[in-house]
Image (cartoon, rainbow, N blue to C red; front, side, top):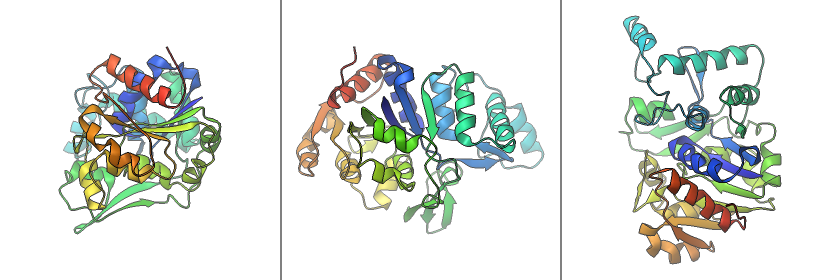
Length: 311
């Protein structure tokens, strides 16, 4: 079994490559839920949604989120009623959140709901939320403490980052199957996700970080930072605010206590020695996922680094 720790658009695109190489039945995704939030009374799980929409082939690739060719009549009417409109949700996307919220109110867990919705989308891989209990990533700034979605979308990442807080993480338990999947995995791949708020939130859940020290398979990460900047998103601002080096070295340093190998882009080949000085083996390849071939090749490279060969 292959386990992928995932959050955000980068992870969804990476998983497009993994499913080209590994049978879906052999893949377990542990998804970040620290970005989850209630909007208009509905439970929204952005990172679970982006993975499901992407692998189902319906994602709006232009925006990087939501459903392709969606409409916005509901948001327009909500705005007419005087509601805030900074978090845009398409009509079909809203149906996802209505369905999820309804199932949760019936007493189902987020894990159960996610599994049911994956089946609806025809997905055979297993997607596990990092926890069934609420965890909320917040950004501390001079202007106050903001939920990550609020900080990123409403405030456009304009505030200085002073700290990142995972509210509820230490009180929460990993979702059923998460720890078992980690310990039984043939390989654990850390997707090119934001190391602070995506992978960082998963690691903050009590028991998950410790479980990564009890694995039999290799743990391989790919840097989402290339040439000193993230491919997408505010990882650089968050890393800088936490006094992390905004580079593949900074990412490797965050994962150093459990990582078996760091994969970096050819543009950053000169950083290999600095990462190896941390005691982490390094391999260099193209990590820019411009097309489906590049996505699959990156997945193959990481699996080979873990000692697994897939054609």
